[in-house]
Amino acid sequence: MKMKKWVIVIMTLVIGLSMALSGCSGDDTITIGSKDFSENMILGEVFAQLIENRTDISVNRKLNLGGTFVCFEAIKKGEIDIYAEYTGTALTAQLDMDVIGDPDEAYRVVSEEFDSQFDITWLEPLGLNNTYAVAVSNEVYEEYGIETYSDLAKVSENLVFGGGYEFYDRPDGFDGLKELYGMEFKGDPVKMEISMKYQAIGNGDIDATDAFATDGPIRKYNLKVLEDDKGFFPPYYASALIRNDTLENYPELKDLLNELGGMIDDPTMIELNYLVDVEGQSIEDVAKDFLESKDLI
Amino acid sequence: MNMFSMIAEHMYIVFIAIAIAVVLGIFFGVVAYWVRYLDKIILWLTEVLQTIPSLALLALLMIVFGLGNTTIIVGLVLYALMPIVRNTFIGLNDVQPYLKDAAKGMGMTKLQRLIKVELPLSFPLIFSGIKIATVNSLSIAVMGVLIGAGGLGFPVYRGIQTRSLELILMGAIPVVLMALVFDYVMSNIERRLTLRTSDTNK
Picture (cartoon, rainbow over the protein chains, first blue to last red):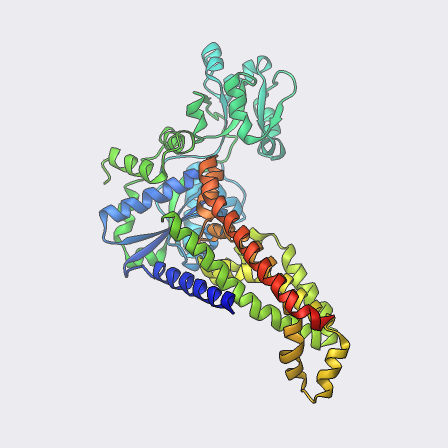
């Protein structure tokens, strides 16, 4: 009997507490989501702080949602109003279309399709293109003075390539790249965990690696991202997606968020990712400092 | 969000889920016990639910229930059904036949027998099912962050993403402690229940 009473007391306490915790959203509230990796969360936080500082709308954050599928279903359903998406992902994962090499064309197609199919607007591209890329160590860059993939191909017989497992399995990965540019690396390419490849290139164990173009460790290890001069990798330009009915309710959001258009290019995004992933700064601080540095808040 | 409110919300999510799962689980356990040809189907279904990977299940539930605590609660209920249904079913079947006959002989109806004799006697086993479900739910609830729910998932996942052991532990230690405390307390209750009913149930 004694035990039963305790259980009831504890349960009442907990339920009461949690009820007090919930139910704290006002009238003019929009919800911003993001996928579960730092870059996407930083972008979500940038949108959130910009809106909070420049309008009277309050923002409910659902950062760290479980990937593209969850974010996309949530925005279609109206559970979130805004999140950051990439053109390449939208084409292949959401529209089930083939990749389009031309960045402007890719953006045009996804804008049109999302507007007509899902009532979702693509705002202006933020500037960054988080595609696959090939990066070389600074020593290699200085020794050979290479800038592009074609340059890399000419000296590739002297260099060891190492990359994440996935890069070797994708049709638009290692084999396709080698063939298009005629690269012949020294020895067998090294395959490793994604988290290990930056350390490996930092230690000098490998000379070139695959990377996402905006990865924070690029800065940590002072790597040189080469230029994809034949356009092998499809474009993954990032934009804010916003529901059309949210835009109808808050038309001011369009111009406000479009102020971010072109403001976050690859080097800027690498820097922001670096601050969060490598230096361990909080996403809130990094987003705030960025917006202040651009005089946006 | 401070630590305390994250822990409270985590517990709240698990409590609500377990409360619902207990009601549904005992109901389906009784149905499986009463309706002979349904038992295999019900037990099989609850097992199938267990095999669905949690992120896939949550993502699908999200389409119906939206982002937030409701979705994770529904997911936890589905995962918690198996141990509760199974133990209810086994417990009811294990009640000694002579006790069932005695109840029958006293003129009790089927429902009276269930409520006054069979369920009380099988309660220790049902309770141990609830215990397993509770401890499991505490850890599965961490996934809730991926569909926008509250609780301790946020520090755990941020910790994994930024390779910050400190953040991971900040989220994981309370989960482990809660699981240990619940396991300890509920095991004690379980033992007392078993002692109390074992004389009559043997």
